[in-house]
Length: 434
Image (cartoon, rainbow, N blue to C red; front, side, top):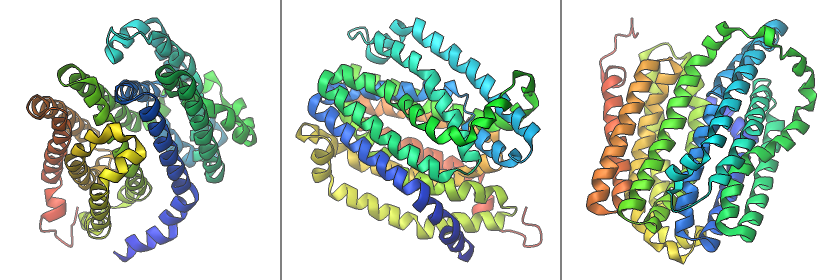
C-alpha cells in the first residue's frame, strides 16, 4: 500500500495535475456544452444520429493510424537517443500509417452512400458528411503521429496546451455549426473538429521539425512493426469492435423502440463517458506501467486489492451521488425533453462500477502481452453485450440496453476472476510466487 501511495503522490498526481486533469476537464466541459447544444437545437433524434456517426468516426480514426499510437509512444521513448533506430521507428509508423489512412479515406469516400445507409438508414442522406470525413481523415492521422512523437519525447507541457486549445477551437466550431445548420452542422462538426487541431499541433511541433529528415522510406523496417503489433492488435480490437457494437445496438433501438429512445440511450452513454475519463486516466497512468514491472503474483494481488480498498469506495460513492442528482443533472446537461434518460441511470451506473472492477485486472493482459487472452475475452464481451442487449430491449425497451451493459460486464468480470483466480485468491508460495 505504501508503494502505491508513494507512486501516486510522486508520479501520478504530478502527471495528472500537469497533463491529464486540465485536458480531461476541458474535454468534459466541451462535451457537456456540445451535448447541451445538440439537445436544445436538434433534440433526441439528432442525438441518436450523431451518436452513430461519433462511433463510426472513432473506428475510422483507429483504422487510419492502425492502432499504432501507444506502441509508437513507447518505442520513441526507448530509442530517442539512437538516431538510426529512431529513424526506423518513425519511418515505419509514418509510411504504414500514411498508406493505411489513404486507403481508408478512399474506401470511405467512394462508399459514402452505403455507409450512410448503415449509419442513418436510407431515410436520411448524409453521404456528403462521410465524404467530408474521408477528406479530413489524413489530417487527423498526421496530427496523431505528431502527438505520438511529442509524447515519446515527453513534451507534456506542449501536449497539454495543444489539447486545451484544440478542445476550445473544436467546441467553438461545433457550437457555431450547430447554431447555423442544426443537425447538418452537428454532423459536419463531428467529422471536422478532430482534424482542426492539426493547425495547432504544427506550432508545437516546430521544435521537432528536424525529425522530418528522419522520415525515409528506405528506413522502413518491418522488424520494428513487431514492437507495434501487440499494441496495434489490442487497440484495433477494442477501439473498433466496441463502437461498432454500439452502432448496431443503437440501430436496433431505433428500429424496435424508436429514434427518440435511441437518443436517450446516447445521452446516457455521454454522461458515462464523462465520469469514466477520470478513472481511465488513473488506470492508464499507474496500472499499465506498474503491472508491466511487477514480477510476482504477490505484488499483483497487492496492487489490485489496494485499488479496490482505496479507489473503488470513492468511485462508488461518486456514482451514488450522480444517481441521486440525476433529475437535476439531465436537464442541466441536455434539456427537459431528455427526462426519460433518468430511468437509464441505475443499470448504467451499476454496469460501470463492475466495468472498472473488471478492467483494472484486465490491464494485466496488456501489461504482460497476453494477446490471445485479451482478444478472446474482448470478443466474448462484445458478443454477450450484443445478445443480452437485444434480448432485454425486446422485453424492457430502451432500458434493456443498459441492463445488457450491466449483464455483459458482470459476465466479463466473472471470466476475468476465473483467469486470475490463483493470483488473486490462491495460496501463494512465498519462495516461488510466479
